[in-house]
Picture 1: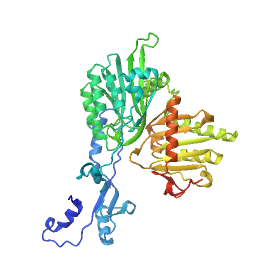
Picture 2: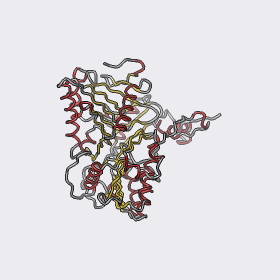
Picture 3: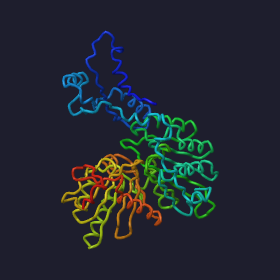
Picture 4: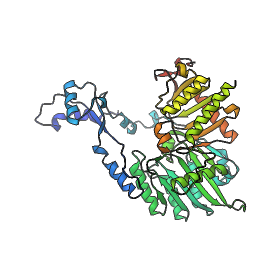
Length: 474
């Protein structure tokens, strides 16, 4: 037999030993969360890494933002603690007896595989399996990867092949969150040691990953990788990798290859986060990616993104234009339809645009895993349905679908529709032009919208209602 006991209970049972000579009246658990945000008065590149690290290390003494306590705690004792810790009423959160249930995720399994969930093995990508060189495949076609249903190793192969290909001249990557002992970082270090020019934009302000990002950037710098740190006033959340390679074609002597993703360059989270990534050598997209990196490197740029949608430049106006196009279709007697899949929907301007589309008669399907500030089933939102899916994998991909008069426009992106993403970050949305790849995405969206096992409707009270227990809200 195996017995498991919470440390909380172990301490409570031995309080007399911890405080000998005292009368133990009772014992309760509390948990204090402190402000993890910080701001820099000056975000110039000089010493920015050291200044951010100093701020991070002060988090343990930051202002209290949440005070969790056992709901059975007597009122007089709670009042005493509030006075002692200077807790405001809005910071109080009554909870159960145990406050750190997330620790159960790390609990060892004493009975072996008998109770372990068995996840399916990743599917192969035939095009990439049939050819040793991913870059050679990309000269012929784009490849769409669906993680973790397909292996993240394909992306690692892309980077590693670029690192060792003698004709590759340069590699550029954005880094937001990477795994510890990252295979991605090791590939970039190998590339630098093999004489490639490697540039990595490291976002030091990725919350709770600041130190890991700093340590990985130090390793890369020691290997000769050029590191560029955070942009003033902005977080760079875009997920991009760009490879430049010599070509035998005299008309196209330098060929570009790229990876654009909805999730991080993190092989560990890629096992449980559902994300999408596009491998491409499309010249127009490559041109725009080159322009994005010029922005990140502080070089002169043209402000002219023709295919990518980039926050701070053209993303907001493009989204509104695509929504307005669906409204125009309906007003002309045709069908208007939008499907949006994302983690969170919070931006007021975007929500109002969707309300306007609904009132005009555009059908809108939303797949929102997390925060949803849009209220469905109201007179102004009667054409909007909100689905939420929580399953074995964390739904992390962001997908935009617009019917567009039957042309079916699809973008994948790193951006949620939140104030911070759309206004205070560098995010990139990238189009999917290949018809077979578009069909893959459309089929997946249809499957998720028809899910009646792991999916719920979000109703007008923002409550979850299991689909298997109720019909569609319309």
